[in-house]
Image 1: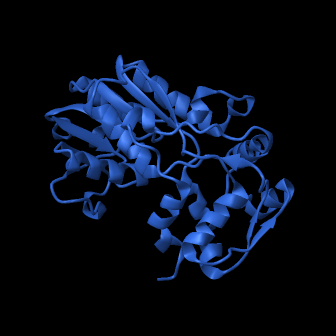
Image 2 (image 1 turned 180 degrees about the vertical axis):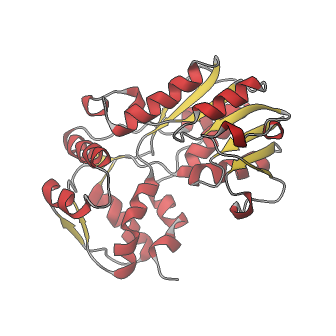
Length: 281
């Protein structure tokens, strides 16, 4: 069995490649720039662009019967090429927003994009599993510059509570669904194991670093004014709606245990794994 991994150089994809190799599975990694992939020995790295069928040569799919689908824009081109060459089993990286559990999800940037990706897969095959992680712990890396420099973090809705998920847990859930049949046809919500306020999330990173991180609460309007140059308006609205709503309705933890059989990694574990991202060393 050879598993084709798209998005193999990303946070989830890179760990998925390692996990599959550790389990004795042959891995082919698709990337636009194979020379820059820096993936482990033993991985068959091939060139290709998910959105450009002309770059997806037949050897990309040779011997492959299942694939991990990174939710790139234009992924339909990849799915058409894959199914035309006999690949019909997919695990899809989606988003909890696609479940549309809350009014804020309907029409949000994440919901619209990930629903389209899910539909592109389910319209082409019945052999699919969809992983719907909530907020990624990696989103906290947006504070890395402030934390490294000692500048205060300025953020709204500090009392809102989310359950950030470690990218390793998503990858291990993906490996489990690719290597077994227990979750075919399932759309699986995934979060971290604990709902934590934004203040608590910062404090956990601070404890990992052995120092207090200065934190200043600002209004949603101030946040919008400070970040509008860098964050597209649909994404900005999605974030502010999410943080606002989780003031009164915190994220309900749905850890990966049901898929992997192991407790999800805590935010403290994530912070330890990413300690170097928050330091100058």
